[in-house]
Amino acid sequence: MRRALCPGTFDPVTSGHLDIIERSASLFDEVVVAVGLSPDKGGGPLFSVDERVGFITSAVKHLTNVVVRPFDTLLVEFAQMNDAHVIIKGLRAVTDFEREFQMAQLNYRLDADIETMFIMSIPEYAYLSSSAVKEIARHGGSVRGLVPDAVCEALAARLNQSH
Ligand code: PNS
Picture 1 (cartoon, rainbow, N blue to C red):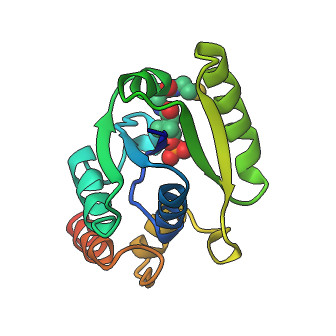
Picture 2 (cartoon, rainbow, N blue to C red):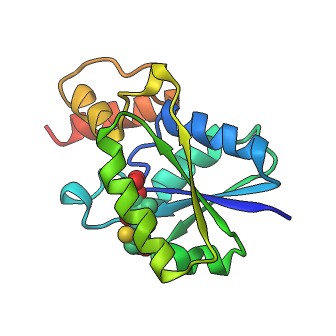
Picture 3 (tube, rainbow, N blue to C red):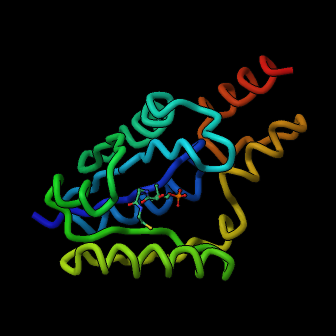
């Protein structure tokens, strides 16, 4: 069984993430989407880890070999616990490279049996990010098509609440 991890903060999941998850699912027997708690990232996530897991679970319902799980450990430990030997990350524009390169090197140093592989984002999503989505939504712009519809509604509800 070839099992891969697709890790991220997914705050919230975007169409770009879902494209990478879908392509990973066609390459591996099983894909575990690993949702990091990431409490320190950018002042703390907008959505709780349960909400983030829920959005992805609904969006990948049609993919029978994908499961979604939260994690709050080192990524390589979570990979070991799930018997996954591959970590898949999406790569967008060049700006992603430095951070991803650092994480891949550190993860390799922590466990050389776990390989990091990169899938290039399609041009349509090359500049899409969770933070850009939140910024657009915060200013009342439409993010329809950039995230699942349920996330659109949740963003509107969450961001209106905080006004
Ligand atoms: O969505 P992101 O920001 O690319 O996701 C980052 C994530 C959650 C994959 C990363 O922060 C992570 O692996 N966190 C777990 C802690 C860890 O293992 N850190 C060492 C790798 S540098």
